[in-house]
Image 1 (cartoon, rainbow, N blue to C red):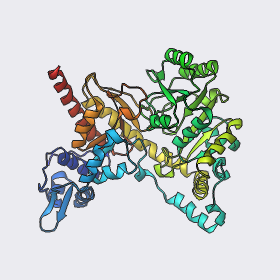
Image 2 (tube, one colour):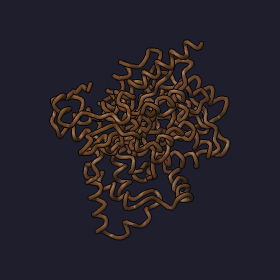
Image 3 (cartoon, rainbow, N blue to C red):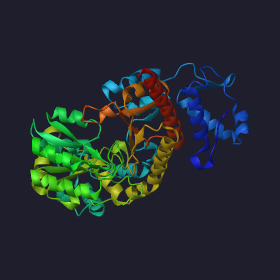
Image 4 (cartoon, rainbow, N blue to C red):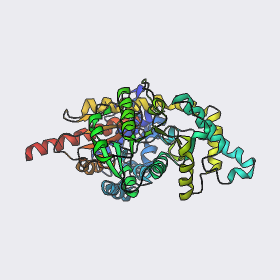
Length: 477
């Protein structure tokens, strides 16, 4: 079999499995095809039999191969997750679903759609140990949390924000169930139905839906490099009198870029001139791959800014813990709005997370995983440069989990999505993140959930399909 192994590219069994998976999903190994025996393939590749055994077992877990003592290992006649493929195929119309990664994994599909951290890189033992300790402590740990959050967690968040963003007291914080919830609460207290909100596009997932539910008008700000078109923003502010401007200056959820300090200062002047608040979305700030960032907007002018943070991205998606850093006069309104739609958060999880943070486990986690994510980012960017046809452009992600691609005129990310799905690759179409109407030429590729080998194979397949679509488009024009 044509399998190339590189000791520097991660575990050997993962490399073998990923390359065989590409052959299966690409049609080079049709259903029912017999694979070499463990012994034969290990001798051919110069690896141990155990390495090949682990690779075959991983492919079996994905439902791509079937092994039996009598017939050996063969490509499955039907993907275990075929029903999942149907569900995935509805994503361009329905958007991501809560069990997306589960369906993607069980279907043997490589997912570059979710901009979240890899749960397999999170070591839960220390957090679970804190939860177990709480079971032995006061039963009141399992009561409702305080409206603004459990005091021990507020203390730890204040310590981290003071160190990484700006000096913060626990009295300026509110804990939320994720950063999207934090933004929803700010929209609740800072706007009224019919108000206009300026948005740095591309925004976070479901932002357009959130604005619709709140009956707000979202106006996209034009991008200029890693920043925004201040002249356009000024024109929008003068004409529509928006209530606030929502910015993601550090490693935005789609681009991975860092807004220049000049644009941050210009945004502050703009907000001050037109009486707007600034909501600074810093959910991805901790996912820094070694760049020196300008000061946070909130640090440059705390009076008109609210800061949104999250542990769901930097630690683990299932933690579902975000927070707000806001002026004291707004804190009571935010906590009141939070209680109106949900009594409070989970005290036992908040206290356990506080103990986890205080013990240094969070910093150790970042020190361990950021090099892994940086290697995945590097694999994504190098594969794009090597394989993607020249008319396609993308952002050079400096942090976070994603890069943003722009297709040449005439190509549609929705059409590419449908074709890529048939070849076992899934991404996020641009329409899920843009408040503007021109969304078909854009897509988001996320690298947080895949190993470098899988990223390279996925990008190569996307590049092939994109080239094919460009050729067909040119012939048809």
